[in-house]
Length: 320
Ligand code: UDP
Ligand code: MG
Image (cartoon, rainbow, N blue to C red):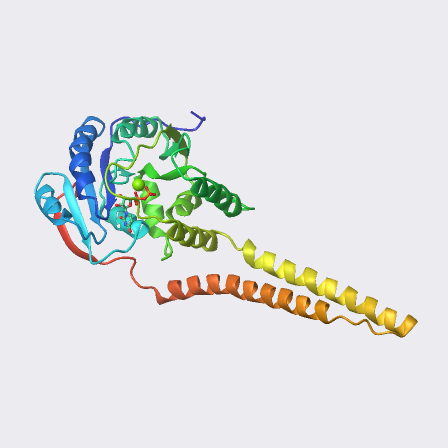
């Protein structure tokens, strides 16, 4: 433990936020485990289940569980995505600390007591990091390695690779996260951006118990673009740099051709050069416009200032 951490004297009241999209089979397994676990490591608890537009049979399960003490169900009006669902859960939570976890049993509830121990020792955030990524496809491993490299190019804060949403955060951190006004909520970046004293807790992610992950490769690419545009501006600079460099080359080449003409009087023939040059430069221009477009699209999303999510129904009673 680094110096400067003040231990906290007693167990916290704890909210557990679980975003769920079509997780009926998993929730039936998770909820009994979780309720047993939370009772042991808190002085009062609630589970905030955020139904992110499920289309399976989970409605009956939510109706039944929301009558039990400590279970709150937020039904969103449609699927808003995991990041929005997490924000909805954070807003509804009332505990001194909040634990966020997936519903698919990839995040073992058994890790929550060690999160709480770190909080008691004075940390503000305890986050789970995968001890390895061998369960993932080569594409996902390679993609995430590059994504974090690009994301962390020259920033004052670092987004830790291999960390996910499975974490415990103190109420002060919750408040800071909720105060951030942006609509594009790339949570892994936001956790790093708000700072605070964080401890990494290694764990081995389990297999998804039932169903399939909703993040297919194309959706992951979309998420990566959301993250990069929300937390970096270097692509814009890189595009300017490439433009500047090419302009310089073009100028030097033009000067050389003029010199050849003046000295030797012959015009260089070069249909191929022209066509190749034309294609190269229009390609680069289109890519640059694309990069600009990615940022402008995000600005458009932000200025519309629509709410992040809409709650259709709130069931059950938690800590508050
Ligand atoms: N999830 C959600 N809304 C979505 C997609 C996913 O609330 O649009 C939830 C899902 O029910 C699960 C968690 O987010 O509890 C993680 O999803 P998943 O297991 O599909 O992602 P992965 O583990 O592959 O990252
Ligand atoms: Mg999963």
